Image 1 (cartoon, helix red, strand yellow):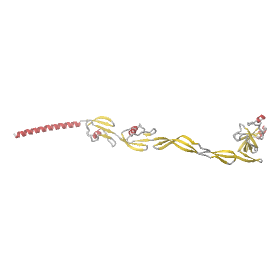
Image 2 (cartoon, rainbow, N blue to C red):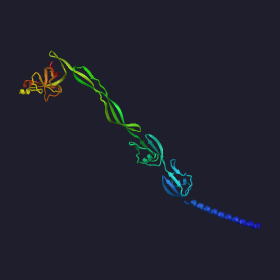
Image 3 (tube, one colour):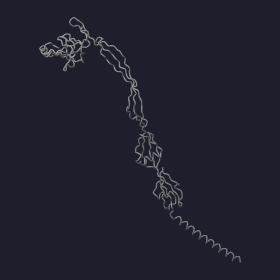
Image 4 (tube, rainbow, N blue to C red):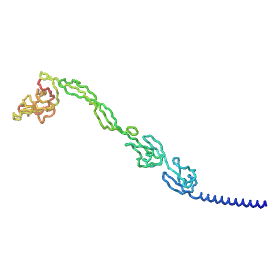
Length: 339
């Protein structure tokens, strides 16, 4: 009896083991089948989502499957060791180094932006009105490229400048020739100059004068220079205000009509006294002493009498013709009173 019961127990045990073995083998088969089936992965690349079926077991294998080679700057979530599960989200951001130089201060940044303007916005770099960017904001920069921002500033700068005084010499007929007298001291003036100055990265690169304002005008230094010359002629002395050198002498007469003897001053021309002059050289009414011809008075003018030229009046036309044209070595301008 005991043997029969032992036999029955043995048969039940073997039957149970067989069932468990079948279940285990079936389970393993199901597991292997499921493991070999592709899984759906939500792959997020630089912010863009894509659904991909994969048989990769880990995130690392999935990246290899997608031919993605991670470098030190890239971002990945989850890690490469994470197991692939159905519906897993894998976020990958491709990044690279760019050198950013602002006002000659350079730093290395990591970004996944390509356009210069986008990179500057990402780095919160604001640009001033005149700032310069190289390359320009619409261009793209490659990995290990460089962006340069030059800070441009424009300022109005004021600067004082001294205005040197002039020295003015004025003829003084009350002082003897060769003597001088300072009647007003000179004084420098002051001007305010306004410049538009352009600075690039803190250094001045250009300066343009935009306005000049005289704050205090300069005061001339005035010197009176003596013009009186003491001359002895014919036993008498006189003082001359001016001495003319190399004066051209010509002659004129009444031209056959005594009415022509009325001068520009309204006087009647008189031989031995009247001469025609350029009033800019010899004032009308002044007496002169002509070397070789004595005292004469400026009483007339003429269209051809300009500069150092004197026309001497003769009472007869024939005398004037015979006189012709001569050179006087000197003519002394005396003044309104004859010595």
